[in-house]
Length: 294
Image (cartoon, rainbow, N blue to C red; front, top):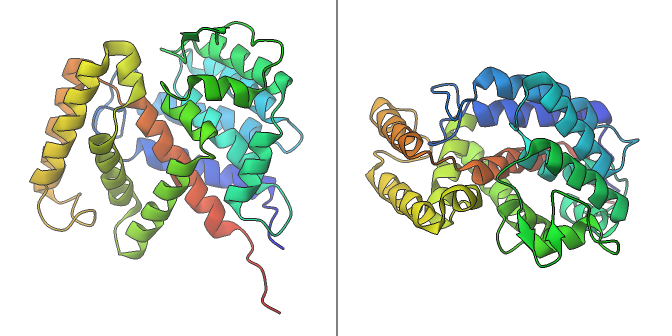
């Protein structure tokens, strides 16, 4: 049998993942080497502090955790710094609390299958509060309003999956996040620092898939331009990444790319959210008690 992790373990893992994400040089995002998009590292750290108790609260349904975390964030910093992170980490936290022999991925599938209409209503309220370049509208209505009467939160995410990376994770059982978590753990095992491991994972993801936050704000043309530039930057890195990402030449290259993206107004925020959730997943997996062979 495995799990459950305690509330303290889950909250500690969440805080650590959020802090690492904003301390990693991820071009186009806010990080310790450069602010951007009218946000600062301090905004993100404060958002982590106020959202963590809600994300890890085992007495709350997933949707309520999300709504309360987003509302606490807005009270603290007055803007949307972490909606995507909260949307991804709340069901992961709920899965980590479950007792049983299943893997975290299987427990998460059970959590997603159990989401109901009230979870959808709570998340729609959170999205209205955050007012992002959000999940948008589809034929069934505006996700910043009320969900259709027969929809669960998973139904809402399935409807948005083709145009939103966060929603797509719900639709696929967080497949990309679990794959990223394995890659991140492998980078650490190879001797890379956590910051370099995450920076390399982010850059590779940016080169491989368009960021839907950029698409929603600026259109697919700029998203493709960012993707192409990321591939070019990857090809220019010296040494043996990810262990060499912090050497001066590579750091300078990433900072140049960072300034370029910010001059375009391009914020790969959806991929940054996936990075945070991937680190959270990796930490939860590593912390979970393992079955004892008989």
